[in-house]
Image (tube, rainbow, N blue to C red; front, top):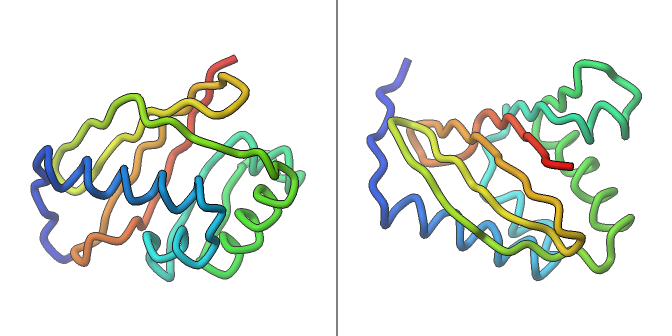
Length: 124
């Protein structure tokens, strides 16, 4: 296993702000640049959307389909970054969408700084 990087405030916020800008631009390719090829995302929305109780999306190709569908279903989608937390090889993005729903995404990063695992959690 490659060593994990200790993130700092500047690196974590830069990643989070770029991620939010990509989503707010609805730029699928730019969004996907943040993710590793073998990414695994676990989300209640994925469970609902794909009819799979595990809510697991595996691999960048499937993630592309999942995100594309989300952008198509939500043309008004917009995120506001509320806070960012960082640690060793992980970052937590806490943000609010255009409907006022808050999300906390735990993102584990690989040695190249790409997201390799995501745990998405939602409010109300």
